[in-house]
Length: 476
Image (tube, rainbow, N blue to C red):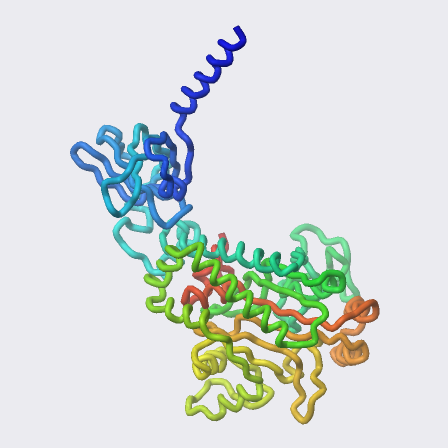
């Protein structure tokens, strides 16, 4: 009796599994070799082609650039089945007679989950829309091929960055978004206060939730330095904020930074090696894991840019000093809008010129004037040109992508610099880091959006972030 019941249950389960379609993502269905399998897919209609006896659809769910072709009887056609509508389709996965795809879905059932009026929908079925046009619709632009490819690439690049640091033994640190320090010293800070009634007031009568002025972070560096006193290497990857009144193609009010801190190092070359390895490792990962998406960007957004990327991957990055950079600029016949005297900060026009001059390859510029760098940059103690052990990585088409330095670990020099800037009381905790088990160390930050611009050849930084925040922009 027991054996009979077991056999009955086994047969019932087999019958149920055969009748119940297996839910697959579009990317799984396209690559599936299980021809004849009953499956169910969910996604959005990219094209509709009704014929007398058959209905042909292309459906995409964002998991891949390629859509799945669906073949159905014309009886399953519905007036709500339009370009942009959301659907759920069940049927059999069969080998396709077309050379353009391996398989196609022969539908038994099509349900329209969400209708879409193609007349009002801002993206049209047979039109290619430029990035500037789709930027007008931040709530809908993820429905386009170009931007969905960008978002898949961005997601994969994030994974590659975490994998790189994990492989190198770095510990990920979640540094705070709310902070009381201005790490960069530029004063471009968003101050944060609660919308409701504040409790505390400072000496000038200002109200503060945390008893001191609080800002959105411009960098996680100082908090990483804390952690670098206990680990072989630390990094963070998160949003940073700059209250810069700019609507240029290269600035955002909110953007993502990859920042790392390396203890027990006295060499800029050590930092430069990590920067270059991070760039190469992440880019190799993207080219291997997102070939179709990267190819689409290079074809539609930046034709010919793949050759530039291949060149950057084959050649070593160039290295010059800031003084050499100034000499190159002053020897140029080009007229610059900004002056190029020694001691001036390099502007975007200078950075792009230097990169082109040095072979259109990524370029490290080292040993900047000491006065240009924040209090934490290590003093080279050189004369007559006083410099700091700082480095920027400039890349083609973008300019500065990474900035870093050795940190000043010598307590007496750091105290003098902070006293000179009137920050010795504010950064007493920072001095403690040099009093208790301090080691020579350094670190850098990489603008994630600028990295994506460099690899994909995207001209405007607003086109490589899901929801761009910039001066006088409208927020969702």
